[in-house]
Image 1 (cartoon, rainbow, N blue to C red):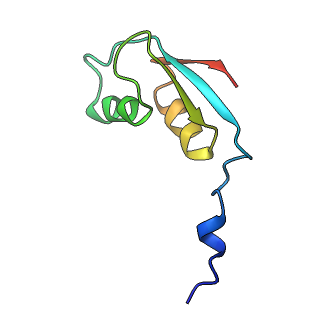
Image 2 (image 1 turned 180 degrees about the horizontal axis):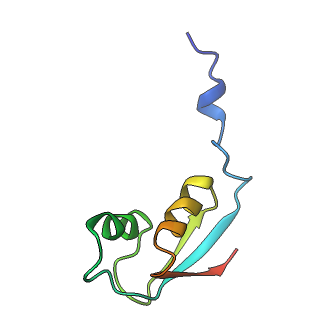
Image 3 (image 1 turned 45 degrees about the vertical axis):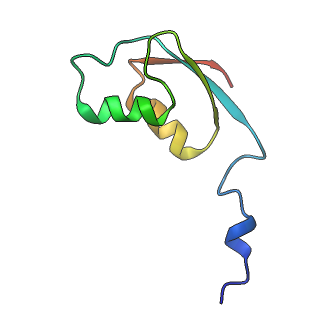
Length: 74
């Protein structure tokens, strides 16, 4: 069995670092996967702000919808 090494690892969480993201654009007339990415970022209305863990996966999602969101704080 596994020694439990993966269960205690934060998977690159950068020791609790977070990033705040604000939605600035509308998901209307966008591809469905961009809408789903916004929902994955806990955003679905213009002006909403979400505080997320600063991981490579989160950064990739932000890059995918960079034209619809703005990083408020790092």
